[in-house]
Image (cartoon, rainbow, N blue to C red; front, side, top):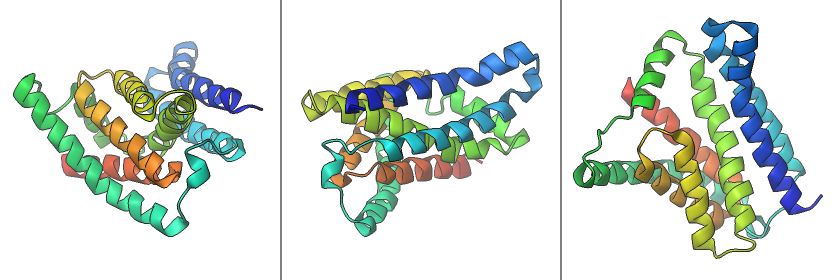
Length: 208
C-alpha cells in the first residue's frame, strides 16, 4: 500500500470515528449515554489508529527519527512549550480580537467531566493519539512530501483549528504549527502525542 493510501485510510478512519457516537445515540435512542459512548468509541478509535500507524511505512519526516531518549525528552519539554504558546496566542486573541480567554466548548466539556469523569480518558489519551496521527502524521507528513514544509504545516494546522469549532482559531493554529515543528524535529509522532496529551491533562487540572 502506498503512503498516499495509508494516509487516506487514517484520515477516513478518523472522520468515521468522529461520526460514530452521534449515529449510535441517534439510532439507539440513548441520549444520556452519549459521553460514555464517545469515550468508548474514541478509545477504540485511538487503538485502531495506533494499529494503522504501526502498519504504515515511514514517511520522509520519520526516516530521520531521533533515538528513544531524546524523543521522550522533547515530548516532555513540548508540554511546557505548547502551554506557553497557548498562553501567548490567547493573549494575542484577547488583545487584538477581544475574544474571551475561555472557550465555550472547553467550559462545557469541563462541566460535563465533573459529572462524567471517565471523559478524561477521551480528552487526555484518545483524542491526542487520534489527532496527532491524523493531523501531524497523515496530513502534515503526507503533504510535506509534495509541498514546502511551511505550507504543509499551515494547511494541517488550519484544518486542526477548524475541526475544534470554538472560535479560537489562532490558538489552535499556533498549537498545530508547534506540533508540526516538533514532529519534524524528532521524526516521531509519539513525541507530539506526549506533548499534546500532557497539555490537555494540565489544562484540565488547572481548570478545576
